[in-house]
Image (cartoon, rainbow, N blue to C red):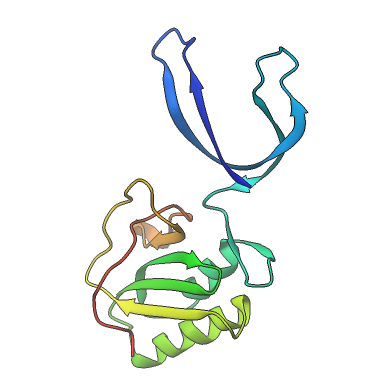
Length: 165
């Protein structure tokens, strides 16, 4: 399984070179019928930003973990990064309702969804930087005017701010 990355040189406006689609695919057993010797996509599994994987291999939609953080009072913004199957990093920008109990609620909720064997590295940060290319899978959410929030997307990796505890 991997992300579909395309190159298309036949475009009226500009070529697409190593265009990252965000689609996670499995290569099929067939070869290109046009005789080019290229791989053929056997199955589209989902989007690279749409899921997390439990240590038992269960693929879960990213909203399963995003909803945990959205339900906790005091979370202004957050970013969830899955570095490995057994290691999740959570960055939280607190708002005025943040309390120490919020950190415990986040960890408890994520453990219920991801399993007791997952290491959760949760940190309070002042801000969350915009997305950088070539970063691990994660979800991100920000409060928008009127209370709406953005959907999951890729976001930068490490942040060495204070832990939530």
